[in-house]
Every structure is written in structure tokens, then in C-alpha cells.
Image (cartoon, rainbow, N blue to C red; front, side):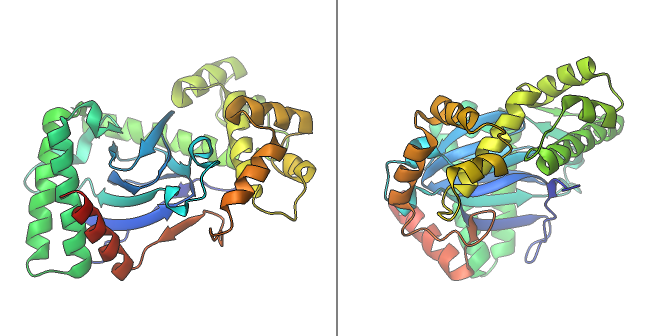
Length: 322
């Protein structure tokens, strides 16, 4: 069975803290044990965190709790009529271990934050300050400025203190932490099963049996975990597959329909009109207008920036937002 992407973070420079600049057209659902704060440097798109979708744009800053499933994609609704490749969202990711600074603040290991747009809880001035601290820290990280380790630890501690003061959170017990881990493992199993089977016939009953639950119980559990019904979730996965296959001009729309798990091309048509207001044929025509300059060389449609390019875009961002 295909597994949910469990991302293992390697800390090359600083223990418990990592910075990454990444342009993403599509990054499938994945999970890791670190807190993640992402800043949208350019472009717009969709971030899916747990069971909620967020429309993201340049200047946004989001906090994702440790152990929560999330994904990123360029938003077709916002970019189909654009020929500017800069509409593809460019992110600064800051990944912070839940062991970071625990010698001084042990509660961090069992903290559960509300994953959120930081603007939901912080003032505009506070968000601006958080972004500035993290962008400056990332630049120092890539350049390896003198004393960068101390400056980054100081800035990250300030950001975490702001989050603890303003963002809703819960500090749970070790027993609760273990229970939550078991729940996350169940979510991983469910997503892995759907990822491996959505291109063919997939039945709720089969997943219910895998989890040793009745179909009714599993159906209610699924909706509570993911915020949508099982069938709606499967259809979303099939639509995402359609979007990934659309740029391949060698594939017909009929082939894309079947390879995405839609047994009836008319159903794919209805889904496209419902989600985008376009038929698949119209979608592909509009998509072709903007794909001329965009390289799609790998399955995930993402480009991790080099150190030099990371420094360049961070300097451009700070200059534009001074």
C-alpha cells in the first residue's frame, strides 16, 4: 500500500530549527512531528491543514501544529487566467522541533496549537513583526552570518512566546499525547489507503473493516476527522489527480478521467463545472496559456531553492516590505 508521506526533518545547521524556501505547484498530503510556520513570499494558492482549506496569498503567515496532515497547491481558481509564473506560491518554511528549548520550557513537547492563519489571533503589527523576525532569521541561516545561531534562537523564542500568548493552545499530559499519536496513526492509515486506491473502485466498507469498525461508525468518524464525507474526500483526491494529469498533452480527457478514478467521463465534467466553472476541455485550454514557461519535471511540482536563490528572494522580500 502507498504510504502517507511522513516527512523526516534533517537539521543540517541548527538543532531543532530549519528554514526552507520552496516554490510549490503541488505538494501532496504529508505529516511531520515539527511545528511549521510558513510565510507566503509571492503568489497565491491553497493550503489544506487537517480538514480545512485556506486560500493563501503573499504576506500571509500560518502556524501548523505538530503531527497534523497538510498539503499545498497552486489554486486553479486564481491562476487559470494568469500567464505570470510568479502566481505559483513561493514559501518560506520554518520548521521547529517540539524539543526546541525544552530545557527551559518543557511544556513545548506536549503543546497542541490551533493550526491557523496568524492574522486570526495576532494584530497586523504582531504578524508583521513575526514575519520580519523569521525572514531575517532565514537570511542569517543561509548566509551564516556571525552569531547567526544565537540570533536565530533569540528570534524563534520571541515568535514562540507571541504564539503562546495569542494563539489558542492546550498543554496536554503524556497520556493524552500518546492517545493523540494513536489518532494520528489512524489518520495516516486512512489517507494511505485512499491514496493507494482512489484511482480504482474504493469502498467505505473496506476501510471500515481495516479499522475494525462498522460502516456507520466509520462514516461518522471519517466526517469528524476530515470535515467532509468519505465520498466527497475521494472525489477531491480524483480532482487533484485530474489537475496533475491535465498538463500532459499526450493524454486524452477520456484517459485522464479513467486514470483519476472517474468511471464515467460525464461525472468528471460535472465535477469540473462544479469546482471551477469550466468543463475539462475549457480548463485544459486555459491551462495551456500559462504552462509555456513552467517546468513540471517531477510528480510533486515543487522546487526547493538553492542557498543563493533563497538569499536573493529573502533580500527582495525584505527590501519590498521595509
